[in-house]
Length: 388
Figure (cartoon, helix red, strand yellow):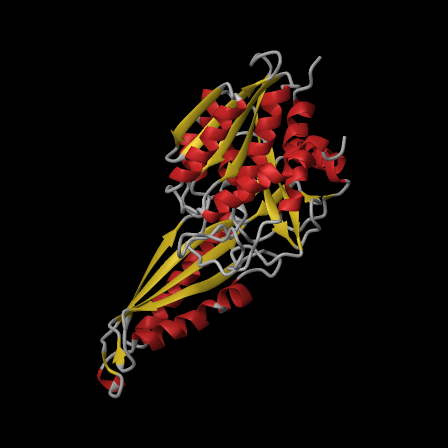
Protein backbone atom coordinates (compact mmCIF):
# COMPACT_ATOMS: atom_id res chain seq x y z
CA UNK A 1 0.00 0.00 0.00
CA UNK A 2 1.61 3.34 -1.02
CA UNK A 3 0.74 6.77 0.37
CA UNK A 4 -2.88 6.65 1.48
CA UNK A 5 -5.27 8.63 -0.71
CA UNK A 6 -7.00 9.92 2.40
CA UNK A 7 -3.93 11.95 3.31
CA UNK A 8 -3.72 13.51 -0.12
CA UNK A 9 -7.25 14.73 0.52
CA UNK A 10 -6.35 15.88 4.03
CA UNK A 11 -3.16 17.70 3.01
CA UNK A 12 -4.68 21.23 2.97
CA UNK A 13 -6.16 20.66 6.42
CA UNK A 14 -2.99 19.20 7.96
CA UNK A 15 -0.86 21.86 6.29
CA UNK A 16 -3.07 24.53 7.86
CA UNK A 17 -2.49 22.97 11.29
CA UNK A 18 1.24 22.96 10.66
CA UNK A 19 1.34 26.59 9.60
CA UNK A 20 -0.72 27.66 12.58
CA UNK A 21 1.74 25.93 14.92
CA UNK A 22 4.63 27.42 12.95
CA UNK A 23 3.28 30.94 13.36
CA UNK A 24 3.07 30.50 17.15
CA UNK A 25 6.35 28.85 18.22
CA UNK A 26 7.00 28.02 21.85
CA UNK A 27 10.28 27.05 23.49
CA UNK A 28 10.92 24.03 25.67
CA UNK A 29 8.38 23.50 28.45
CA UNK A 30 6.52 26.61 27.28
CA UNK A 31 4.37 24.75 24.71
CA UNK A 32 1.05 25.68 26.32
CA UNK A 33 -0.70 26.92 23.18
CA UNK A 34 0.67 24.07 21.09
CA UNK A 35 -0.36 21.49 23.68
CA UNK A 36 -3.85 22.97 23.87
CA UNK A 37 -4.08 22.86 20.07
CA UNK A 38 -3.01 19.21 20.02
CA UNK A 39 -5.38 18.21 22.82
CA UNK A 40 -8.32 19.94 21.13
CA UNK A 41 -7.64 18.08 17.89
CA UNK A 42 -7.36 14.72 19.67
CA UNK A 43 -10.69 15.37 21.39
CA UNK A 44 -12.23 16.34 18.06
CA UNK A 45 -10.96 13.08 16.53
CA UNK A 46 -12.56 11.01 19.30
CA UNK A 47 -9.45 9.61 20.97
CA UNK A 48 -10.24 7.23 23.82
CA UNK A 49 -7.99 8.98 26.32
CA UNK A 50 -6.30 12.39 26.37
CA UNK A 51 -3.86 13.48 29.05
CA UNK A 52 -2.42 17.01 29.18
CA UNK A 53 0.39 18.37 31.31
CA UNK A 54 2.17 15.05 30.96
CA UNK A 55 5.86 15.39 31.74
CA UNK A 56 5.47 19.15 31.94
CA UNK A 57 3.66 20.40 28.85
CA UNK A 58 3.36 17.09 27.01
CA UNK A 59 0.16 15.57 25.65
CA UNK A 60 -0.71 11.89 25.40
CA UNK A 61 -3.53 10.51 23.26
CA UNK A 62 -4.72 6.90 23.24
CA UNK A 63 -6.59 5.20 20.40
CA UNK A 64 -7.93 1.67 20.81
CA UNK A 65 -8.33 -0.59 17.80
CA UNK A 66 -11.50 -2.36 16.79
CA UNK A 67 -10.79 -5.09 19.34
CA UNK A 68 -10.23 -2.62 22.17
CA UNK A 69 -6.96 -2.46 24.09
CA UNK A 70 -6.49 -6.22 24.50
CA UNK A 71 -3.78 -6.59 21.88
CA UNK A 72 -0.33 -5.08 21.55
CA UNK A 73 0.44 -1.47 22.51
CA UNK A 74 2.82 0.66 20.47
CA UNK A 75 3.90 4.25 20.95
CA UNK A 76 4.45 7.02 18.41
CA UNK A 77 6.25 10.22 19.40
CA UNK A 78 6.35 13.73 17.90
CA UNK A 79 8.19 16.74 19.33
CA UNK A 80 6.48 20.12 19.76
CA UNK A 81 9.05 22.74 20.83
CA UNK A 82 10.65 25.51 18.80
CA UNK A 83 14.08 27.14 18.90
CA UNK A 84 15.36 30.57 20.07
CA UNK A 85 16.03 31.73 16.50
CA UNK A 86 14.79 34.82 14.67
CA UNK A 87 12.99 33.63 11.55
CA UNK A 88 14.14 34.99 8.19
CA UNK A 89 11.84 33.21 5.73
CA UNK A 90 9.41 36.07 5.10
CA UNK A 91 6.61 33.54 4.59
CA UNK A 92 2.96 34.43 5.23
CA UNK A 93 2.88 31.94 8.13
CA UNK A 94 6.26 32.99 9.57
CA UNK A 95 6.73 33.19 13.31
CA UNK A 96 4.75 35.93 15.02
CA UNK A 97 6.96 35.67 18.12
CA UNK A 98 10.25 37.60 17.92
CA UNK A 99 13.28 35.44 18.57
CA UNK A 100 11.40 32.13 18.37
CA UNK A 101 11.04 29.85 15.36
CA UNK A 102 10.19 26.31 14.31
CA UNK A 103 13.57 25.87 12.63
CA UNK A 104 13.74 22.09 13.04
CA UNK A 105 10.37 20.99 11.69
CA UNK A 106 8.73 20.02 14.97
CA UNK A 107 5.61 21.77 13.72
CA UNK A 108 5.61 19.30 10.84
CA UNK A 109 6.24 16.27 13.06
CA UNK A 110 3.37 17.22 15.35
CA UNK A 111 1.04 17.81 12.42
CA UNK A 112 1.89 14.50 10.72
CA UNK A 113 1.19 12.58 13.92
CA UNK A 114 -2.08 14.50 14.35
CA UNK A 115 -3.03 13.55 10.80
CA UNK A 116 -2.30 9.91 11.54
CA UNK A 117 -4.31 10.18 14.77
CA UNK A 118 -7.36 11.45 12.89
CA UNK A 119 -7.19 8.56 10.43
CA UNK A 120 -6.57 5.91 13.09
CA UNK A 121 -9.44 7.20 15.24
CA UNK A 122 -11.76 7.04 12.22
CA UNK A 123 -10.77 3.60 10.94
CA UNK A 124 -9.36 1.68 13.94
CA UNK A 125 -8.14 -1.05 11.58
CA UNK A 126 -5.74 -2.57 14.08
CA UNK A 127 -5.79 -5.01 16.97
CA UNK A 128 -4.43 -3.28 20.06
CA UNK A 129 -3.68 0.23 21.23
CA UNK A 130 -1.77 3.22 19.86
CA UNK A 131 -0.30 5.71 22.32
CA UNK A 132 0.51 9.11 20.82
CA UNK A 133 3.19 11.05 22.74
CA UNK A 134 3.43 14.73 21.84
CA UNK A 135 6.65 15.59 23.59
CA UNK A 136 7.83 18.94 24.95
CA UNK A 137 11.41 20.14 25.24
CA UNK A 138 13.30 18.02 22.75
CA UNK A 139 15.72 20.87 22.10
CA UNK A 140 17.99 20.33 25.07
CA UNK A 141 15.29 20.33 27.72
CA UNK A 142 15.04 16.64 28.59
CA UNK A 143 11.44 16.31 27.49
CA UNK A 144 11.69 12.62 26.63
CA UNK A 145 13.07 11.76 30.06
CA UNK A 146 10.34 13.89 31.68
CA UNK A 147 7.61 11.93 29.89
CA UNK A 148 9.25 8.61 30.77
CA UNK A 149 9.50 9.58 34.45
CA UNK A 150 5.83 10.62 34.35
CA UNK A 151 5.03 7.01 33.42
CA UNK A 152 4.69 7.06 29.63
CA UNK A 153 5.98 3.55 29.05
CA UNK A 154 4.55 1.81 32.11
CA UNK A 155 1.13 3.46 32.42
CA UNK A 156 0.00 2.11 29.04
CA UNK A 157 2.39 -0.86 28.88
CA UNK A 158 3.98 0.36 25.65
CA UNK A 159 5.87 -2.52 24.01
CA UNK A 160 7.54 -0.72 21.09
CA UNK A 161 8.12 2.97 20.33
CA UNK A 162 8.77 4.82 17.07
CA UNK A 163 9.53 8.35 15.94
CA UNK A 164 10.32 10.34 12.81
CA UNK A 165 12.29 13.47 11.88
CA UNK A 166 12.46 15.38 8.62
CA UNK A 167 15.88 15.61 6.98
CA UNK A 168 17.01 18.19 4.41
CA UNK A 169 19.20 16.72 1.69
CA UNK A 170 17.10 13.57 1.30
CA UNK A 171 14.60 13.58 -1.56
CA UNK A 172 11.08 14.59 -0.49
CA UNK A 173 9.17 11.71 1.16
CA UNK A 174 12.06 9.26 0.79
CA UNK A 175 12.95 7.55 4.07
CA UNK A 176 16.24 6.58 5.71
CA UNK A 177 16.95 4.45 8.78
CA UNK A 178 19.86 2.41 10.04
CA UNK A 179 20.26 -0.32 12.63
CA UNK A 180 22.33 0.61 15.67
CA UNK A 181 23.94 4.04 16.15
CA UNK A 182 22.17 6.71 14.12
CA UNK A 183 22.65 9.92 16.14
CA UNK A 184 25.28 11.06 18.64
CA UNK A 185 25.20 11.96 22.31
CA UNK A 186 25.13 15.79 22.55
CA UNK A 187 26.96 17.12 25.60
CA UNK A 188 27.40 20.82 26.38
CA UNK A 189 30.21 22.66 28.11
CA UNK A 190 30.76 26.11 29.57
CA UNK A 191 34.20 27.58 30.18
CA UNK A 192 34.42 30.73 32.28
CA UNK A 193 37.74 32.59 32.07
CA UNK A 194 38.53 35.02 34.89
CA UNK A 195 41.30 37.60 34.77
CA UNK A 196 41.76 41.29 35.47
CA UNK A 197 39.95 43.77 33.30
CA UNK A 198 41.01 47.26 32.50
CA UNK A 199 41.50 49.90 29.84
CA UNK A 200 41.90 48.65 26.28
CA UNK A 201 44.79 51.08 25.81
CA UNK A 202 46.74 49.57 28.73
CA UNK A 203 46.33 45.76 28.44
CA UNK A 204 49.65 45.15 30.21
CA UNK A 205 48.10 46.25 33.49
CA UNK A 206 45.58 43.41 33.55
CA UNK A 207 44.97 39.88 32.33
CA UNK A 208 43.09 39.98 29.04
CA UNK A 209 40.32 37.38 29.30
CA UNK A 210 39.31 37.75 25.65
CA UNK A 211 42.84 36.79 24.55
CA UNK A 212 42.87 33.83 26.93
CA UNK A 213 39.44 32.64 25.79
CA UNK A 214 40.49 32.96 22.14
CA UNK A 215 43.58 30.82 22.81
CA UNK A 216 41.38 28.20 24.49
CA UNK A 217 39.13 28.10 21.42
CA UNK A 218 42.16 27.34 19.26
CA UNK A 219 43.57 24.79 21.73
CA UNK A 220 40.31 22.82 21.85
CA UNK A 221 40.54 22.17 18.11
CA UNK A 222 43.53 19.90 18.79
CA UNK A 223 41.40 17.39 20.69
CA UNK A 224 39.79 15.74 17.67
CA UNK A 225 42.85 16.08 15.42
CA UNK A 226 45.51 14.95 17.91
CA UNK A 227 43.97 13.15 20.91
CA UNK A 228 41.21 10.99 19.47
CA UNK A 229 41.55 7.91 17.28
CA UNK A 230 40.68 9.01 13.72
CA UNK A 231 38.31 6.03 13.48
CA UNK A 232 36.12 7.44 16.28
CA UNK A 233 33.38 9.91 15.42
CA UNK A 234 33.80 13.06 17.53
CA UNK A 235 32.89 16.73 17.22
CA UNK A 236 34.05 19.54 19.52
CA UNK A 237 32.57 22.93 18.64
CA UNK A 238 32.77 26.26 20.43
CA UNK A 239 29.55 28.04 19.49
CA UNK A 240 29.40 30.99 21.87
CA UNK A 241 31.86 33.64 23.07
CA UNK A 242 30.47 36.09 25.62
CA UNK A 243 31.75 39.01 27.67
CA UNK A 244 29.98 41.79 29.50
CA UNK A 245 31.84 44.51 27.62
CA UNK A 246 29.45 47.03 26.05
CA UNK A 247 31.98 49.41 24.58
CA UNK A 248 35.15 49.48 22.50
CA UNK A 249 37.87 50.13 25.04
CA UNK A 250 37.12 47.96 28.11
CA UNK A 251 38.85 44.63 28.68
CA UNK A 252 36.37 42.46 30.63
CA UNK A 253 37.10 40.73 33.91
CA UNK A 254 35.64 37.51 32.54
CA UNK A 255 34.72 35.76 29.33
CA UNK A 256 32.55 32.70 28.76
CA UNK A 257 32.74 30.05 26.05
CA UNK A 258 29.78 27.83 25.21
CA UNK A 259 30.17 24.67 23.19
CA UNK A 260 29.11 21.16 22.40
CA UNK A 261 30.73 17.72 22.25
CA UNK A 262 29.26 14.95 20.10
CA UNK A 263 30.31 11.32 20.65
CA UNK A 264 29.05 7.76 20.36
CA UNK A 265 31.40 5.99 22.80
CA UNK A 266 31.26 6.76 26.57
CA UNK A 267 35.02 6.20 26.88
CA UNK A 268 35.69 8.74 24.14
CA UNK A 269 33.18 11.08 25.74
CA UNK A 270 35.12 10.96 29.01
CA UNK A 271 38.45 11.41 27.26
CA UNK A 272 37.19 14.53 25.50
CA UNK A 273 35.93 15.96 28.78
CA UNK A 274 39.31 15.42 30.42
CA UNK A 275 41.13 17.09 27.52
CA UNK A 276 38.80 20.11 27.62
CA UNK A 277 39.48 20.46 31.34
CA UNK A 278 43.25 20.16 30.91
CA UNK A 279 43.56 22.48 27.91
CA UNK A 280 41.30 25.17 29.33
CA UNK A 281 42.89 25.30 32.77
CA UNK A 282 46.47 25.04 31.52
CA UNK A 283 46.00 27.64 28.78
CA UNK A 284 44.43 30.07 31.22
CA UNK A 285 47.18 29.47 33.77
CA UNK A 286 49.84 30.21 31.16
CA UNK A 287 48.36 33.69 30.70
CA UNK A 288 47.83 34.33 34.41
CA UNK A 289 44.09 33.68 34.32
CA UNK A 290 41.79 31.03 35.75
CA UNK A 291 39.36 28.83 33.80
CA UNK A 292 36.41 26.99 35.30
CA UNK A 293 34.82 24.24 33.20
CA UNK A 294 31.28 22.87 33.57
CA UNK A 295 30.10 19.83 31.59
CA UNK A 296 26.39 19.31 30.99
CA UNK A 297 25.44 15.79 29.95
CA UNK A 298 23.02 15.34 27.08
CA UNK A 299 20.92 12.32 26.15
CA UNK A 300 22.71 9.11 25.13
CA UNK A 301 23.44 8.17 21.52
CA UNK A 302 20.38 7.12 19.54
CA UNK A 303 20.60 3.37 18.88
CA UNK A 304 17.91 1.76 16.73
CA UNK A 305 16.93 -1.80 17.51
CA UNK A 306 17.48 -4.26 14.66
CA UNK A 307 14.05 -5.87 14.30
CA UNK A 308 12.21 -2.59 14.73
CA UNK A 309 14.49 -0.72 12.30
CA UNK A 310 13.85 -3.44 9.74
CA UNK A 311 10.10 -3.09 10.20
CA UNK A 312 10.28 0.71 9.98
CA UNK A 313 12.24 0.42 6.74
CA UNK A 314 9.92 -2.21 5.30
CA UNK A 315 6.87 -0.03 5.88
CA UNK A 316 8.71 3.05 4.61
CA UNK A 317 9.64 1.18 1.44
CA UNK A 318 5.98 0.30 0.99
CA UNK A 319 4.88 3.91 1.48
CA UNK A 320 7.33 5.78 -0.74
CA UNK A 321 9.35 3.14 -2.58
CA UNK A 322 12.62 4.38 -1.03
CA UNK A 323 14.06 3.46 2.39
CA UNK A 324 17.80 4.06 2.52
CA UNK A 325 19.56 1.57 4.81
CA UNK A 326 23.15 2.72 4.13
CA UNK A 327 22.71 5.95 6.10
CA UNK A 328 25.88 7.09 7.91
CA UNK A 329 25.47 8.05 11.58
CA UNK A 330 25.13 11.80 12.06
CA UNK A 331 26.51 13.92 14.88
CA UNK A 332 23.24 15.67 15.69
CA UNK A 333 21.57 14.58 18.93
CA UNK A 334 18.00 13.50 19.67
CA UNK A 335 16.48 12.68 23.04
CA UNK A 336 14.22 10.03 21.53
CA UNK A 337 17.28 7.94 22.41
CA UNK A 338 15.97 7.95 25.99
CA UNK A 339 12.80 6.19 24.87
CA UNK A 340 14.82 3.61 22.96
CA UNK A 341 16.61 2.76 26.21
CA UNK A 342 13.23 1.93 27.75
CA UNK A 343 11.63 -0.02 24.89
CA UNK A 344 12.67 -1.50 21.54
CA UNK A 345 11.92 0.75 18.60
CA UNK A 346 13.35 2.86 15.82
CA UNK A 347 13.72 6.43 14.67
CA UNK A 348 13.77 7.19 10.97
CA UNK A 349 14.27 10.20 8.74
CA UNK A 350 11.85 11.43 6.09
CA UNK A 351 13.34 13.53 3.31
CA UNK A 352 12.57 17.26 3.35
CA UNK A 353 14.10 17.79 -0.09
CA UNK A 354 16.53 20.50 -1.10
CA UNK A 355 15.66 22.84 1.76
CA UNK A 356 17.81 24.99 3.98
CA UNK A 357 19.39 22.94 6.74
CA UNK A 358 17.90 22.47 10.19
CA UNK A 359 18.37 25.17 12.85
CA UNK A 360 18.75 27.83 10.18
CA UNK A 361 16.69 31.07 10.16
CA UNK A 362 15.65 30.33 6.56
CA UNK A 363 14.56 26.72 7.13
CA UNK A 364 11.03 25.68 6.11
CA UNK A 365 9.29 22.33 6.57
CA UNK A 366 8.11 20.86 3.27
CA UNK A 367 4.34 20.33 3.52
CA UNK A 368 4.39 18.04 0.49
CA UNK A 369 5.92 15.25 2.60
CA UNK A 370 3.01 15.23 5.05
CA UNK A 371 0.97 12.47 3.30
CA UNK A 372 3.96 10.12 3.29
CA UNK A 373 4.73 10.78 6.96
CA UNK A 374 1.12 10.26 8.03
CA UNK A 375 0.88 7.10 5.93
CA UNK A 376 3.99 5.66 7.58
CA UNK A 377 2.55 6.08 11.07
CA UNK A 378 -0.78 4.54 10.07
CA UNK A 379 0.72 1.60 8.23
CA UNK A 380 3.12 0.90 11.08
CA UNK A 381 0.11 0.57 13.40
CA UNK A 382 -1.78 -1.65 10.99
CA UNK A 383 1.25 -3.84 10.19
CA UNK A 384 2.40 -4.25 13.79
CA UNK A 385 -1.10 -4.92 15.10
CA UNK A 386 -3.07 -6.57 12.26
CA UNK A 387 -6.68 -7.53 12.63
CA UNK A 388 -7.24 -11.28 12.55
